[in-house]
Length: 113
Image 1 (cartoon, helix red, strand yellow):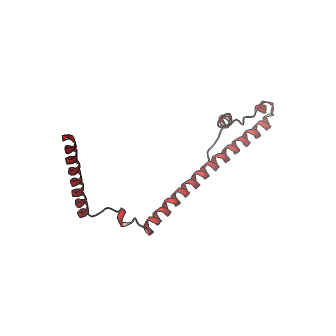
Image 2 (spheres, helix red, strand yellow):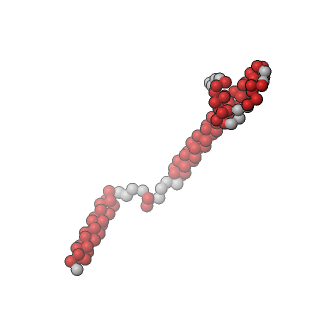
Image 3 (cartoon, rainbow, N blue to C red):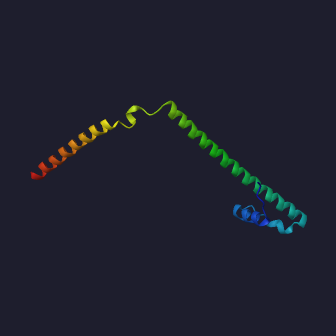
């Protein structure tokens, strides 16, 4: 469940993060081991916090989607925005064809002038 870290992982992270301690070569071996352990613990905490934040954001997004779905169920789209019956579709198609033919005939008349 938990990731394992080596000193190389921590050193690479600290190099990117800018928290590398230059004085580590002056430490005794016991102090260096303690410092490395603390660095590993800090890195693990940061990773755990990032993971927790990712889970919280995912849960919030899921909750928002559920709330929107519930609102759609409670307040469905108005009839004016829903798909019309095929009969209405055919009537609209005929009207649009008439408008298009009228536009074409007026364009031809303009060309003749």
